[in-house]
Image 1 (tube, rainbow, N blue to C red):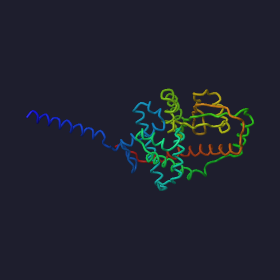
Image 2: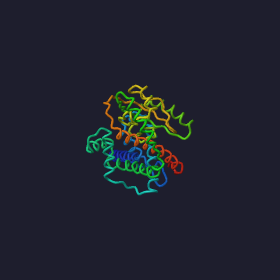
Image 3: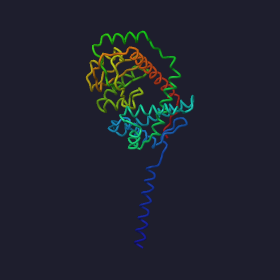
Image 4: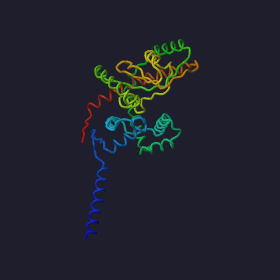
Length: 312
């Protein structure tokens, strides 16, 4: 009799363990964005994805990382919904292959096999990353289609700016930069945000602050821009960089309706051999991307206000 009771108690204990374990792994819907949902599993996957792109996020407090992953997913879902209203969620496969290649090279991987092995250590695969990059790529195309005609480039002014820099420079400098782009319609909100960002740069590190706060496309990579020649940088920004030491960041620099904070990761001198036409083309691309990024932020803010988001 005692043996039967022991077996029964053991059975109940095992049953409860399995049930509790099952419930712990249960997929729950946490948010609904129009016809899209976000589950607890999606949040975990997003956290892994964000950490894979920027390892320093592992140092964030768990609650902050949870909030950031949630906000990141909500942005992604809103963009996906808007894209599907206008175009089919399709992208040229070869172009996507190139986007993935650019990503893993920026993360210092030599080939896709190395990258996939790295992703698997975060319970991710190429399919998950591909889908996320597809949404970002199609969003950028959408913004280009809507606003490319609104982009204004003063070629004469840019050429003059470039020529002046070439004439003045004894040697060309290159800066390895990271950025935090801060954008808002209301100046008072921007000022409050800047104070919070400066505090979090000191507390969490520049990379993490960039990932959390920056409105630039570089945000998920910790704000990393990479190497930029001094000839491709505006006089206003270059002046601030000249007064900033390697490893430090600039004060917030006002750019039209936004602010930018730049960190100098490294810098070097290069030989003064400049192909004017190539440098000018790069300068035009930088200016176009800057304006399109501003349009992207404005458009996203507008559609977010009209998107139904509910917490389940």
